[in-house]
Length: 332
Image (tube, rainbow, N blue to C red; front, side, top):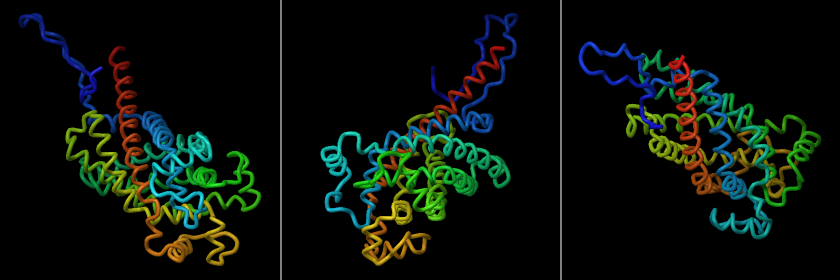
């Protein structure tokens, strides 16, 4: 199968004017597929992309969570991502970096299905309004921000459980045990304690991410053909830029999710830390300005391939599913 812009074709003309072939069916170019693809196609492609994004890079995500710890245990202090992975595997077991991956898979599928479907729908509607069907960076940013509201509503509880399972010396034996303990001790609200901070981080992250991705596509793939290399490069650049810019907010989110006992007790905070403003103050008390950029290396290393994987998988499945539907329609 040739992965180029066309998904249909015309018959070669026969010899002589009398043998002229009947008119060929209209060819749909790949660049028109986003507007022609169904809601179901966007949701399936988005779900697969989300699961791939979060699972392939999950060990690095585990390292990122630990490196963002403001008062880490002396046995859990790392200088680099590689050193951290090596130390975790050697001292805690081969499968330890994957702890909590099951809850991430359960959350990532539906979260990304809604995320990409909402983004595509809003991007088209807003672009038609703002730029008469052209590519509007404002439309891309707004669509990505709104899609984030749906994504985080589903993903936030999974993030809370995942990050608690990832921490060094996590007391939870399983995902189910973690959910039950958090619910019993801290109440249902604990699963959304970081939601406002998550949104405060993810709205600018996704706005920067989508604007950068669409900008890169304009530069290296202006015809918007199915081009895996352009999707990978654009996704990686978009992920790196957005990740670096929003690391301070990610550090605050991690603190709210994990409720590090050692860190909170060292600044005389009893009970549970809540609220973005309190999280910002606490991070500054514990680490100063540099505290806001803890784990930035791991975050960028995680996001670059993650977003590259997400976009390349999403664009492939969107192309494949839509092409399959078009072929079925033209064969009838």
